[in-house]
Amino acid sequence: MPLNVEKISSNRAFGGEFNKYKFNSPVLGGTTTQFNVFIPAQASEKLSPVLYYFAGLTCNEDTGAWKGGFIRDAAEEGIALVFPDTSPRGAGVEGEDESWDFGSAAGFYINATNSKWSKQYNMYDHIVKELPEAIKELGIALDLSRSSLMGHSMGGHGALSIYLKNLDKFRSASAFSAIFNPSNPECQWGRKAFSGYLNGGQEEGKSSDATELIRTVKGQKVAILADYGDADKFYQEKQLLPENFVAAAKEAGFDESQVQVRSRPGYDHSYYFISTFAPAHIKFHAQHLREY
Ligand SMILES: N[C@@H](CCC(=O)N[C@@H](CS)C(=O)NCC(=O)O)C(=O)O
Image (tube, rainbow, N blue to C red; front, side, top):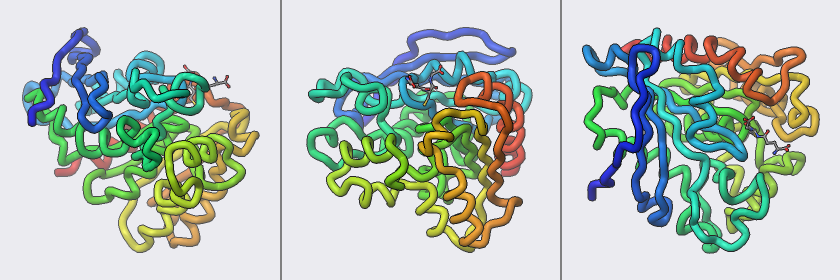
C-alpha cells in the first residue's frame, strides 16, 4: 500500500534541498506524521547515503534540523539527513499531553505493548520499517543500503538501541547525551517510559536498552561514537548512565576502535553542546557511509 507521502515545503540549503513531508502513518495508528529530509547537491549525480537524526524529549522533526548544526557538514560529505518526529501526534490517548517526558514528543523509539498505547505508539517500527518505505516513495537519489543513525538524549537511546538490534541494516551509530541504560532503576525517564508503554515494564525494556544490547552483539563488528557533557544536569542526576554502557561494552570485548564514549568537560545537555560536536559526528559517519 502506498503511503501517499506529500511534500509540504522545500528550501534551498547549502547547495542542496531541505524538504518537509507528511503522510498518514498506518504504523502510528493512522495519525499524520511529518519528517524532514536534507538532500545534498551531490544526489543529482550519484546516490547519497542516509543519516537519520533522532531528537530528544519535547522535540520534533525540526529541532535537530534547526539547532543541531549538521547540514553544512552533511552537505560537504554528500550525506542526506533524515529527521523524523519523536512520537505520534494527536493520537488521542488519554494523558498523552500531561507530561513533557511521556506521551507526545516522548515516543522513546520503541513499540508499545500496553494496549492503551500500542495502536499509535510504535516509533520503532515507524523508523525501521515505515520511514524507509516512505523515503523510497519520494523517488529521490538516496542509497538506503548505506544508512547510519545518530540522536540526542532519548534519541541517542533510539540511535544506539535501533542500531544494536539491526547491525545488518545500519553502518554506524552515534549519540549526544544518550540515555544509555533506560531499564536501570536509577533512570527515571526510562522507568516512566517503560512502565507506561510496556506491559512488562522495566524488565521488558531491557530488550530495548543499549547497555543490555551491547552484550548481545559480542564478537560482531560495531561502530559507535558517543559524547556527553559532564556538566549535563541529567548526567549528574543519573538519567544517562554512560559508565554502565562503557563497562558493558568492555565486558563484551569491544575496544575504543569500535565503541568510543567521550566525556566532554563543562558541556551540558543543550544544542550548544550538540552543535559543537556535530561536525565530528558527521565525519565519523562519513567514514562508514562512504564505502559501497
Ligand atoms: N523540559 C525539560 C528539559 C527538556 C530537554 O532538555 N529536552 C532536550 C532533550 S532531552 C531538548 O533537546 N530540548 C530542546 C532544546 O534544547 O531545544 C526540563 O525542563 O528540564
